[in-house]
Image (cartoon, rainbow, N blue to C red):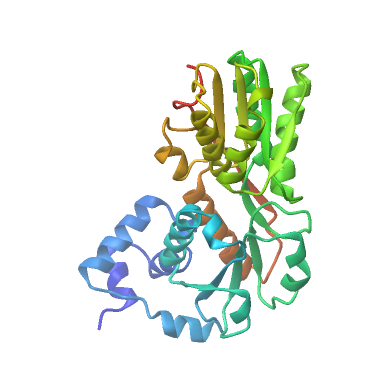
Length: 316
């Protein structure tokens, strides 16, 4: 049977280095990891994860909660899952997707929670293992998110610089931190440019946005742009304008937010604020594993910067 010593000799490194590559790859250079992983592959070495878990009193399981309705997320959470799974796999952890109904079934070493709303925080306090939230919050929980305020501010400034006469923000009708941050980015940027903000909110469904456009069509002058809090809302705005015979992007512009799928299937394709969802997923997993290793110590927050992707729904 191949041992840790065999791998160390093959890679020409110390046994401690091999152990660190296996257990704490984030602490090792890419060059060392490549040497050790190559030696492990050539020797068909597989770490005894079960034994390691037993010694460390760990399950090597991370539970992942999605508390939002899955039918409103499109492939967003699949991208997130990819990032989380890749990071956990590198650290020999398995990922378990669970719901509120089986929150207490089975053991784990920690939780990553997504789609958390204000009503959920009392319930979250029942978690007896380290928790990291995917999503900005004001309750002191460690979290990873995109910089929602900066992302919409970027979109709004682009709309102003593109000489649109009226800039309307289409928001999601929920009083949650991420949404308030997005609205704040819009309002602050408009005020800084001596422009009058106009905010409209709907449920995060495209049909609501499309209905608004059609119902209020006579109120919109040409050279108006809609900065939307989600690609789903932006898709509805686009559909409404097209159905009313509006010219996109010459007379009406649209900017979405998310950039994971809907922006690409729209026609014209949406200009959008693209989030680094896979990378944010990996960061969530890494933060939680660090928290577990440090006995539950606070990890703070990480905000990722988004990128404005210019496509067919805004003027060049």
